Structure formats: structure tokens, C-alpha cells
Length: 197
Image 1 (tube, rainbow, N blue to C red):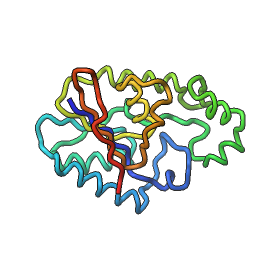
Image 2 (image 1 turned 90 degrees about the vertical axis):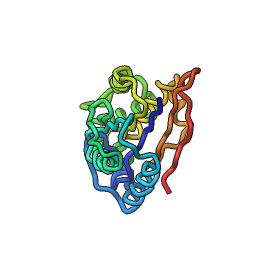
Image 3 (image 1 turned 90 degrees about the horizontal axis):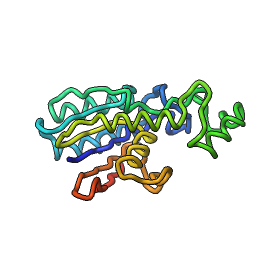
């Protein structure tokens, strides 16, 4: 079994360092180029059988997933389990704005991420359990393509590869990155990490 974890292309919010999970912003020019790079990669693998495409409900992921789906002649399914973390009171603020407006909550989130709970948002524990539930519900499939978000990919890597919390930060997961995992006798291995051109 193979799993491809695809991070959505760069948006204006990524470019301007805005904190966002449930909100959506349009792609940047760089993001549009990343779409082409991702489609070029999957066009070499496109076949209609044995592949299942699942996307986060966020528009920035769905738009990309639909284009990948055309290559494989299938319509992607959406799953809330692949949605980005809800950043609550930080949503729509830059890092500096969040730090200035909510210093205590920001400090707690930054330095005690695993135990913090963002007001009006999602706690890391709830986020972690959501990703775990999604992974556990995956049926056997030859290949999966998951179009999702940075935090989701990092959490999936930690759970699938049985890494310690925080170890996924050793991987560079920029916008437009594709992580290819393959299941072997000893478990899942990282086959390659493709960074956008």
C-alpha cells in the first residue's frame, strides 16, 4: 500500500504569515506554479484503478484535489478528518498580531503546544485524536492520495511512522510538498519527499 500526502499550494495567508485553519484564502502565483508541479508528478502515475483520492473540505485543498482527480478520472471524496486544525481566536491574525492581542494564549500555544487548548478553537489533543481516528478508519487500498494541510501531514507522519511528538518537524513540509509512504514488512517507510519547484 502507498500513501501520498499532499500539502495544498501556497495561499496569500501562507505568504503573509497569517494563522488560519478553517478560513480560506486564494492561491498566490507561486501556489499556481505548485499546482502544475504536483499535476506533473501525478500525471506520470495516473491510472483509474486502485487509487483513492480524499481531500480536506477546505477550498484550497479541494481545488487541487479536483484537478488531481481529473488525471485519475475520479471525483475525490471529502473528509473532515483531513481538515486543518481550528486555530480559534488566532484565526486571521498574523503571528505578531496574535502575540500582541493574546499574549498568554499565544505563549501557551507556542511553548506548551501538546497541552494547550486555543480559546474557541481545537486543542492539540482533540486534533491528535481526530487524525488518529481518520487513520484507523482507512480501509485497505492499493494507493491513497490525501490532499490536506501542513499540521495534518505532520501529525499523520508521527502516527503512521510511530515517531515521537514533534519529530515530524525534522521534515520540510512546504506548500505543495508531496510525501510518498509505502507499507513494507517492517511498517511504513518514507519513499520520497518531493518539494515544489
